[in-house]
Length: 141
Image 1 (cartoon, rainbow, N blue to C red):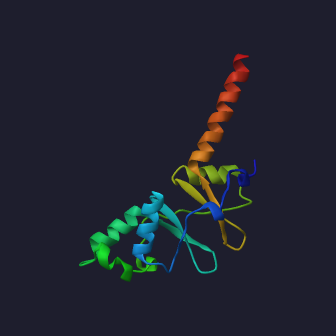
Image 2 (cartoon, rainbow, N blue to C red):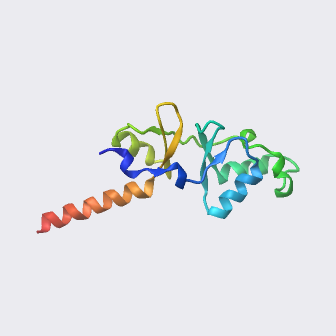
Image 3 (cartoon, rainbow, N blue to C red):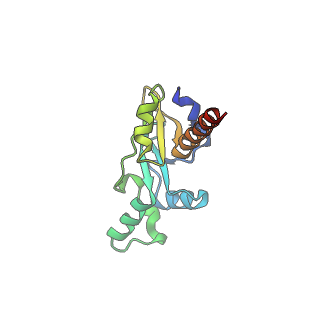
């Protein structure tokens, strides 16, 4: 199966620019109720994923940093503790599933590393569940 079947295109994904501020990222994540978002550079290349944990650790480990002055911190200055590996759009399902086991979403890039969307783990699970139910129904018919 082609993994593009599961793709949520970039236009529907909330991302953050790597040069944005910590405050911008926090506000965007809060507004959309996300715990992690893809980070892109100015050319649209996938850089990594920013998580709530990354923001919390930065806040904890930076003396005198508060929400009121976190607009002075660039996302590029925030260490990321989790590495969400992307897949290429022409990757196989095996590669996708091996990443989805440990990531809520898998970023998808083209051959040049340009971000084109994500594949949500929930979409993969729903697909597998529906196939399981269909197979179960076939066996009982």
